[in-house]
Every structure is written in structure tokens, then in C-alpha cells.
Image 1 (cartoon, one colour):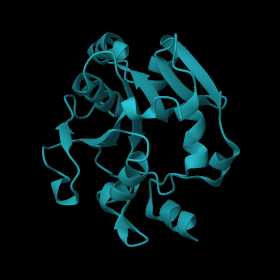
Image 2: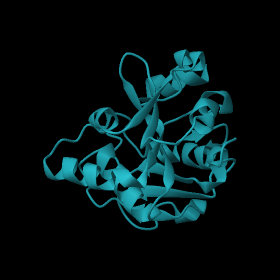
Image 3: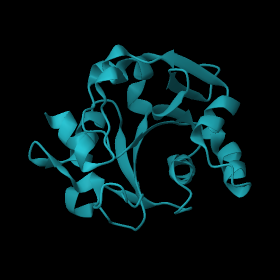
Image 4: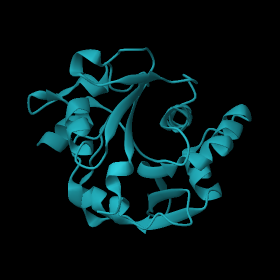
Length: 190
């Protein structure tokens, strides 16, 4: 895969999980917290995996380093801004939310192998942008910061405004890989 070890992976886990009723990241799937399962997959292609959460050390018991979301309540764009700032200059980050019950490499491979030259973001597009999982370059930080300041909190607008690379959604996504409710999770496990 193309220079994948230069990636730092960020898992967004600062939300309230209100539809789920408890911390989705700590939900057990096949005997392990879902956030640990995601981190294990990400370690295959990221040199570091970090969680963006609402308080420091939230996942220390799972041996996952945490950075605190600078803009809690802004949704995923606040987590993206925090990740871009934490990553440093001239870096690519891999961004994903903590609610991916299934994370097959066949689904991730097109993102990870796409050419990164002359773009700031690489994401799937299937009639609409799919902002996670996706790759974002730290050069997007000023734009993301500006969007937060003007309360323009949509990640798809960041993708649309960035110099982007659109990838076709792999067929595997049709199975539904994410969950927001207990019913959705049960459907994935059946």
C-alpha cells in the first residue's frame, strides 16, 4: 500500500451516543470493545492510533491514547479539527468514527491505496460524500477551523470545498457496517 505507515489514525469517540443509550465505543462485539477492534485494524496501516474524546484518558484502560475534542458539541467536524491540529504539519490522517462494527480491509484498501498527490481529502462518494472513513491532509486545518467559527459544521461541505479525490463506494458497504442503535447492532450480528 502507498506510504500507509505515514498515516496517523484518529477514532472519533466524543459523541453522546444518545440513540444508543451508552458509550458505543465500549460495546462488546465478539468479546471485545468495538473501539479496540477498530484500533487493531487501523494498526495494520497507521503508525499511531489516537482517540478524539470528550475527556482525557477516557480509553486509557484500553491502552488507547486520547486527545480532547477542542469543540465538543460541534459533531464530527470538531473531532476532525482536533485530529488535524494534533497530527502536526504536512501529514495525512485516517479518520473514522467509533461505531464501525465491521471494518474489512477490502473496504479500506481503495482509500489507502489511492494516490494522494494534488489533493487534500480522499473519501467515498455514493450520490453523497461519505466523510468517514476517509483521509484528510493537515493543510485543511484553516478551512475546518473557519467552518467551525461560522457554524458550518457539515463534513461533506469540507469534502466538497477541499481539493478532493472521489472514490466509488465499494460494494461491500451495502451490507451496512455501522450502528447507531441496539437494533442496528443486533442486525449486524445476525
